[in-house]
Image 1 (cartoon, rainbow, N blue to C red):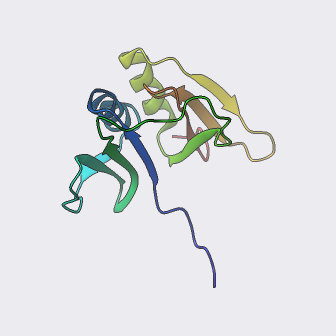
Image 2: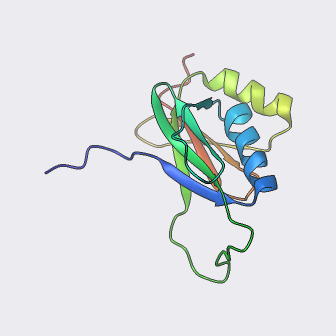
Length: 129
């Protein structure tokens, strides 16, 4: 038995926030809206290539979300290509970001926050693109 990777991340939010998250993950991160099973609740499946990596699901109107608890998930990270193109897109869209260089690996990161306040890392193997 082996775990071979992460299937997807799932975010639930009221419809207005869901649509803002959709815009962020498609416009800023570059994911593509794709095929989704016909679930009872509205939502989106966003793809990186052929893999559905972000599921956005509309929260029910009476759903209570816990906001007074300590969580342990710090951020979501995406493997990306085209560092300079991503930086240009972030600047063009007016999205604030931080640039980090990872010691030893030479990996570059662009760190942003999505509309719900989730930390998102856009990771690049090298800046040579």
